[in-house]
Image 1 (cartoon, rainbow, N blue to C red):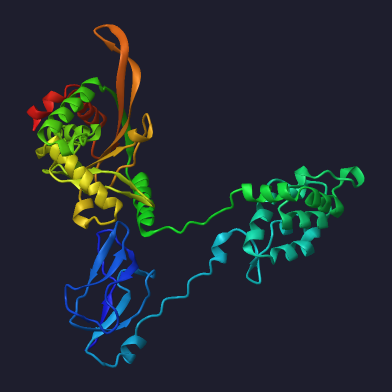
Image 2: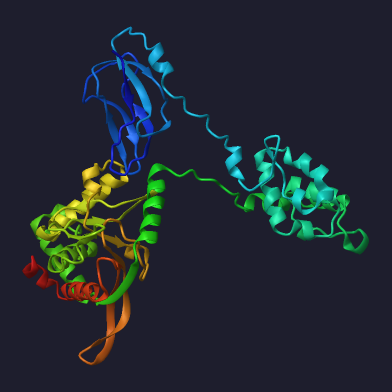
Length: 441
């Protein structure tokens, strides 16, 4: 008997998926565990497995289709089996909303075409404006932008305004020859004829509005971070770290790594050292390595540190499992491997979920300091800025120093100010005296 293959939930937060590529076609034999398609979830491009034995009798959606979890994807059954009644019982997806209805959501519509804003600003110009509004979308855009510059407040005839809109001419640049400097049709036409090149440049130099459809990842990010910011009582703690010792420690590691394995030289980063030191500090401060559970607080026995990785269209947080028990070299290698897989959208759910703490580093972008939103259900996230040259006090004297800014975002339901401060104090000590890290874990 034929069965329906549904869009299955491929990650814990997946609500819908996009069919990237069909790996099996109608008529192909499949069995449980066979990969039939690649599906883009909210986190990565993942493989969809078959759950039935038989032949793919019907593929219900083409590549690029977006389906919610549980929606019918394909029909699998015996060769030649009649699936007419089965297909009749599958709910039909509603037709997609035309793109034109989302381009200008606040623009009045008439017969499916957007009315120009001039219709609302000056009723006397409605007739010419309708003629312009019937143009293609490229012409519609400049008319809205020009109106936003104050077109309706300029002393000009309705026909002059209509022509200006159609050709993308800013009436602020037109000299009026009518009574009291009123701009006439001929004034606009003269400007168009004399300065057609500059008028064209004016249209093309202004970047038009663009509607970017949210992908699954961006939707999930928007939803989860909004919930986190709204539901978690965030507070922030900041500390500056003298980074000279950490940079010197990294140089020693690089030299040692070069002698140990020349092919891996230059691989250890400051961020790798920060990850290791943070894991060590979390081991010493389990109240920070915790999660709010409603009527209790869960203090994790494991230290799994997530590293925020920026992607095209979003970000992921690959997790370094048991980071407190790994060497800096091991952490460095794993961070780079997971980051590469994240950018290729090949991470598995177990590689980016169930962390206990997250680090977000924007130092490579020159950001001095920032605050990050907690990755729920975790209770804290560390924001790492860039290392900058600043004056510092050493042995009572002000000298040139190298300073790293750290900001800890805390969930006040779990972490009190003193608890977060003690954690940052320990982390600062470990980074300023990195030789201590080995003695902690």
